[in-house]
Length: 380
Image (cartoon, rainbow, N blue to C red):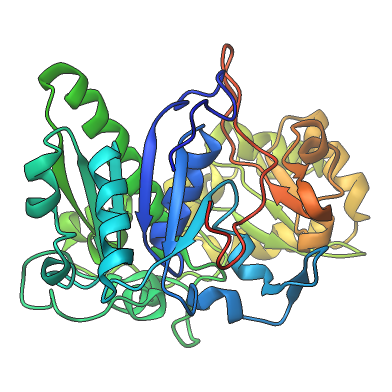
């Protein structure tokens, strides 16, 4: 069942065998990332399939007429697939055999749910002590919430993300992406590779316990440090930055732009772009701390200046002055951006599908790309 030869022998993880017992997003995204890096990933689905196959519209129709949600294709490309009912003895035996030969097992069942099938870490590592087994769950393998399911929206709410996102006087808002799921998938990929590096030294694998909640709390980063320093909740700032000014979204004649002059030198350059040399010596705006104290005033001055410019002209002037600035793109505009095209961030797959490339670039390795998501019941 495992590939005799890697699909791309020049990929960093060529030859690595990953058995994915995961569905929805966090686990499959980790599996897709490993597949892009060259691992042979076999996705095991229940007979009815991963639930995201139905998360549409929009739907993608394959050449043979199979119809699946675009969402499913965003986190399952590059894998091979089988279906298995763990309550069926033959199916279970097949999955157990694959696990015995795997380098990595990736699962996102509720804690303890796989034990009754002998697919838990303790059972599988008994016959495969080199196995790296990564469990992804909402709240982890222990703690008072271990038995609660993990959903991205709930985790965003509980992690502080929503309290920090939105307009200052508006309601808390979730991120536009499933950021808790996606970052847990990436953290899990990092953990798996770290465990594989350790296995190269010790010869044995281990159990990795990844929680969506832990990963999201970890992403509080500097906001958490602000709380530790002051004991106060960081404020919701909309498009402003709590520690930097003038920094935000500003109007032009034909659409808003983002300005990010993140230090005093860049702010002075921005004033020079506007010809506001009269403000260069103004003590109210001389330092970032002073600009924070006078945020509404300086933001109003900058907004009045930007509103007099055409968008592209202002962006060009900022580039010339090395002031960080950028347009606010719709998703369609992202893929029209010359830089995105030059970096090859999309690629063609079989059956006329388009893929979004993982962002890794190596000097002496290649990604394993071009294979679409497995069809349900593909069985290879």
